[in-house]
Length: 145
Image (cartoon, rainbow, N blue to C red; front, side, top):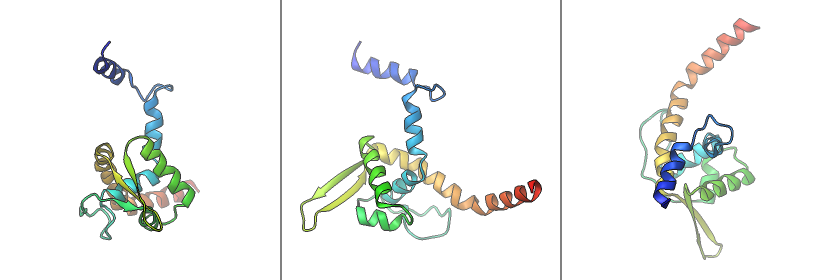
């Protein structure tokens, strides 16, 4: 069987509803909040503005320290682990520039950029509908307590 045929067959066989399917691991990874936020940051969605605003700058490379500053609350360990896993999956590239001190930057690959387009929508949806979700939580809590 040729390589293209094997890839086509594997594509048909991936079914996230099956416990053994490797796509479950990928879904687990890309549904992580830090992954979504890193993809949005590298995709240029890090400008301040109204929640849900469609404004986005062009994707660009960011240094580790820039990503860390953008993602309030992420630990150094979690950021490092998440960036490594995204690099491992081919969603971003890591570039080391031999300066003093060494400069490390991250940039979305084409594969990462295609995922970013979806995560941007998810992030915008969450920001746009958060007030409604909070009101629903309050209503639920009032009914069940």
